[in-house]
Length: 66
Ligand SMILES: NC(=O)c1ccc[n+]([C@@H]2O[C@H](COP(=O)([O-])OP(=O)(O)OC[C@H]3O[C@@H](n4cnc5c(N)ncnc54)[C@H](O)[C@@H]3O)[C@@H](O)[C@H]2O)c1
Image 1 (cartoon, rainbow, N blue to C red):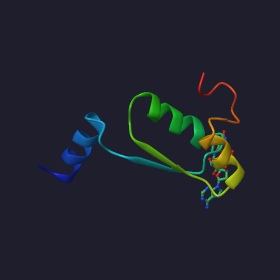
Image 2: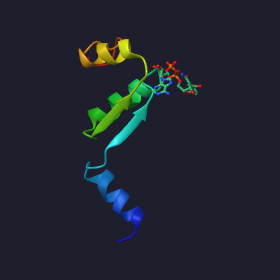
Image 3: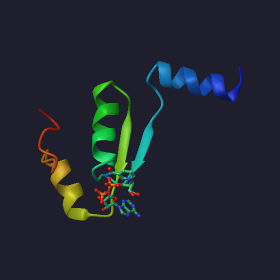
Image 4: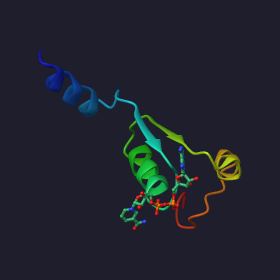
């Protein structure tokens, strides 16, 4: 099996963990979308307040999480 096939299989069976750097207006909805379809996803951000709020379930983009 090629590396590409292995990657595609991991995406298909949702065992591929996606990393998103920067949870702003692009990164946060992207992370939410992957989460909603069941993909493991880890988000990174240097803004500690933003990270703390997200950990507490407080998104700054209001329609997310509804
Ligand atoms: N918003 C758009 O419509 C749009 C369109 C095209 C391209 N882009 C590009 O996409 C990128 C993100 O845009 P955005 O609107 O989401 O910006 P944003 O300012 O809303 O979010 C950026 C996030 O990245 C974080 N960040 C900055 N440096 C970091 C680092 N070293 N490690 C981890 N996190 C870091 C910031 O704290 C912030 O939360 C930018 O490069 C922007 O130019 C945005």
